Amino acid sequence: MEEDRWQFLNDLDDEILKGGATFSEWCTFIVRDADIAFAAGAHLATIITAVAGIETYLRAEYAASPKGTLYQLIEGAPLQASLKNDLQILRRYRNKWVHISDPLDDQELLSRPENYECELERMAIFAVRVLRQTIYSNQWV
Image 1 (cartoon, rainbow, N blue to C red):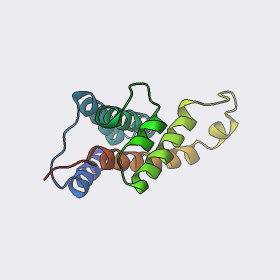
Image 2: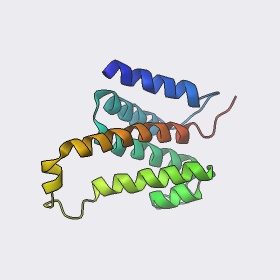
Image 3: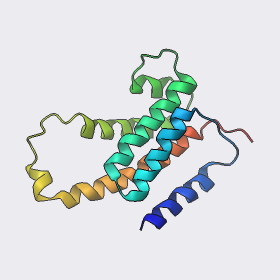
């Protein structure tokens, strides 16, 4: 299973990266950790770390101010509208898990954890794709 996940990431790179791309060492480090989490099946860790990689990339490439929010970074970046939309979807989903409004309201999670696992897996796949679309958005050939 882990080998299949690494192959999925390699296939994504082959699909999306057609030239060359450069980004900061911070971004490289975070993206590598997102990939490790994905390959290990740590879906929530993948999502959170992928969003951190996206934010790091956007902040290094396009930030007008070091204090901008992720929302502002996404909206201010010269990215395709569809990618911006996907980034906002991913940001909101990550926020749902990072900023849990009532951590004691866990009955649904306790009674049907498989529902959350399936959703998290789908979003982890979405996250690694959107991460790559973002960091490879400014390719040179």
